[in-house]
Length: 149
Image (tube, rainbow, N blue to C red; front, side):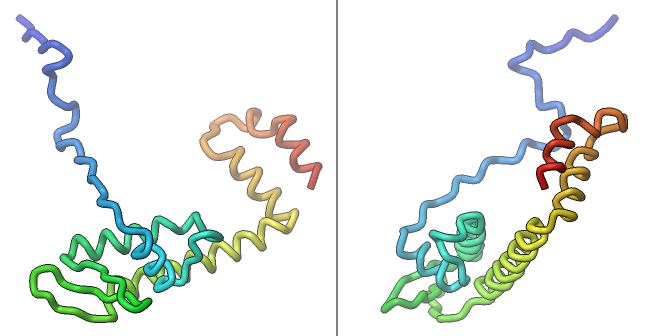
């Protein structure tokens, strides 16, 4: 005799691990975000692809119990439990290094994409990824894109 299945709404999750809970991100004031962007060396208007670094840095500080206070144009980091105040924090330094490296890689990739030979390699690689039959890789659309270079 086979066991009866539970109705669909009452079935547990198929994985043995619990579903990850979605973390609600607190909103930070715009002056804190702009000051943190300045501290990390990120231009909010020109480098919008790196805004996640600012948010990640602020959330990492919050998770460690630190709050950012904007005083006299400078950021001050205040520990919420001990009221310890400092103008330098290692989490911010790590995120600044991350931002510098990613901006360098972005500039390098932008320069590489200006070379037609690199663009051909990139187009072919994107076409190959996920394909198991070589006949589906070379399409007329891909060939016209390569010939335009």
